[in-house]
Image (cartoon, rainbow, N blue to C red; front, top):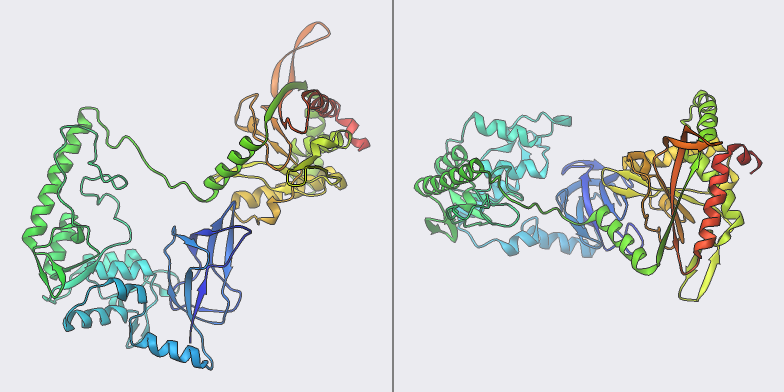
Length: 515
């Protein structure tokens, strides 16, 4: 029985997810609850588990695709007794090809074309058993006219990789002289843009004197003899972009002459691009990057916060020389216990101590009910810069933990954020946030509040600066801070008093022992 599995709702309010990677391949045996894919949504990557015991039949999306919730992500072959409904569905599926969408989109072909398609659909089976290959490798094999059953796989468990297919293609062509259908690749090969910018479709190089690019047919399927495909490969030409010479059995047919003409036009365009570079024009002036995933989520959150809460930022600085000395003493003790102690746990303890005296900075505004919600728990978020955007892990119950417990919990969450293994739950429920922009330099900033919280504390670079002590200038360790507040809830004077108390704790870290 064939079981379709749709992308589930992997988070509250999530309408779509980006497929980061497949953890299985077609033909793999899977067990129930075994992770089959990694999907990115909001600020986390989640693993999608298999709902059944069975065999992977078809992967319905490519890595990097954005899949709406509810769309079929993968299908499984499941052993067992079929219901009447599933039997009917199975019978109907046998009368069609594996993918109903592909049948609907492909034009009618001759008996020869049907035989060719049948051989392609069965190319994962051989007389000796199943050939394990990624969908991209099988697609590439069809494009290059390679019999994937004859390719020796070098991947895990003998799987055939794209490189294996390319190596087989370079080793020799099939002896067949019959034309074969070539399907368009999902994405153009690197450098195979025919002198045309891949994003905009405009000529590469911004020179006004650049000649017109060769006309591109941009088909999905092309009929060509093996010799023609070989010429196209040698010339670096995408057959599906070559204007058709004629039509055979409803399919576009391309001759070697047409390929050579198109290749010459490409070469002329590339020469013009080289000339533009020589005169100082270095190619496309712009590059377009998809605005989605974590970056889009961050943008939407920041926009909502900035245009909802009127921000005011209070700046100050404090001498933290004693804090530096205290941390240096405790760092060795922490390392003996396997914990890396930074300054952040001290800051978190100082903030919680001050929040107890200024509860409105540990609150949220319930706009629907016109109420200020004062929170008697202290979950401190720590903003973490990662390769994929800003994440805010939340350390819960900071008031109930000692310094080493806070450091241990924070280090674990920060590492999970950087590894993109952190869960949504571990980034929710915060009551106050800290952002340490000083780690990469700089003294002051205007951090945006992590809505629906009402305040965020930014830390500048902790370093030695000239400081006046008893009338004398000394080199002392100082820490700049930037406290942004929601001015609907917190007055500027209250923010200044809160900041002063935080700085007092950091100036004299022994006071934290009383908390």
